[in-house]
Image (cartoon, rainbow, N blue to C red):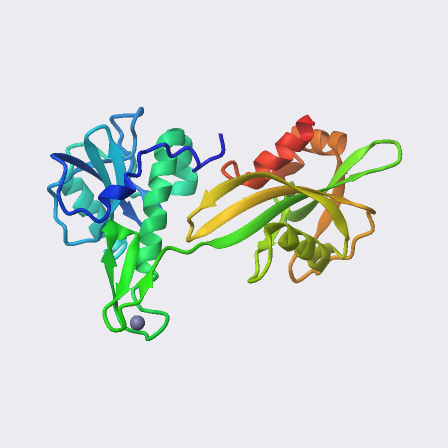
Length: 300
Ligand SMILES: [Zn+2]
């Protein structure tokens, strides 16, 4: 399961413009891209607060679980110390750490469901925090639809959440003997190399496939074909959507744009497997789509 994607909560979008409240509600507090974890309940480690806490800080609707509304509360306007004090004072559960934990570490203990839910809360909070002014007239905006719309107080423009679209692609080459290799960017780390797929932002006026071809050409000088969708991943840190592709390079002679990709190399499946097993090669972080794509390629 791709990390941050398994958020099966009923988002109940029809409730976003309704003011009537459910009888029960729970609130997941977050601080920037960090979540508060409970020491006592490893099966549901993300701290949830009772709804009737202070609404001094922004609250965003995430959806419903049965007959319980789930919200998140963004404490990013507080110092980390005051955010922790606020959460400690609002729950009887002891915190796992004295401070909230970065989502990209916490996902390991949160499990699929909660990591997706917390990522949604972080993404909605990031978007609201970063859109307090209207892009058209500069006026202040106000939140509507429980966090999924902002309206300019001056010109009344409606602003909906927008994403940065990023393509992540695994470039493969198959030689005349059928030997497969893939081109990975690499960075020196202690005792070895950290490898990952190539990637880039989709530009205005491009399809996703066009973006893969352009980025491959710009970063490596390679012409590619057979661009194929693999899977996608929400990446609300702060507001991205990752889309993974495979593609075939017609030859292996690349020329790097070192301002974008400082180093890269072709790896056969056996070279990569061996490098990983002897610890010389580390693959990008466990929550990344690039890591999944690389390991899937090794299984092909
Ligand atoms: Zn405006």
